[in-house]
Image 1 (cartoon, rainbow, N blue to C red):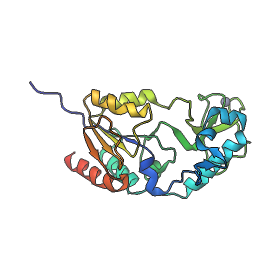
Image 2: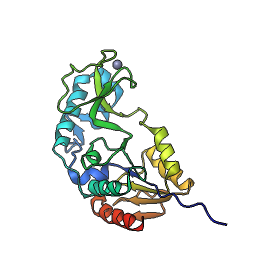
Image 3: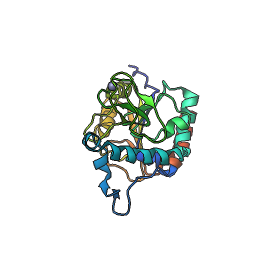
Image 4: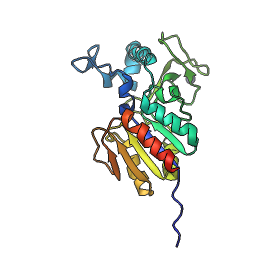
Length: 237
Ligand SMILES: [Zn+2]
């Protein structure tokens, strides 16, 4: 009996650890606060409706700081792999909102937590997004319903985006890499279980391994491990 050929699709889930070496700031001061607020307190729908000016200021600072950052060797290794094999065979899902994968040249990045570089209508997630850089003034409004535009970022208490596309991609991948993510936050933490259950080989790249359902662990930073791993992947493809 011949076994079905293993899928040659690679799915890479990335998190904050991928961008750490690019110097994306955390916005926490020595007390772990931003302007006296818990960072988690300004990243909620409740904060937006209570004090949009405060939330806009927080994201304006993040946008300006992120604009100055550059992709590192981890982002560039993924971009080079995708350029060689195509975005059907190298699927990128990220929890990062910084846009550094795209800045490195990656295509079709599935941004499950949204993007710092887009705004969306506060009244409807179905209304058109706009590309945005710089500082929001509060004058930005929806072209359909004239409601205010908010950062197109998934906040605490909100559902991550593209869950159906991600589940579909997990079902097609033969190999799953989790890079620079704690593996503790659901639903992303559940992806490896799904991938493993569907028969994918699961690898974690994380200097502090999560202890999740991985077949192999590379306890290193993304920017040092990915150039080597992507080269090995390309050599065997
Ligand atoms: Zn609208």
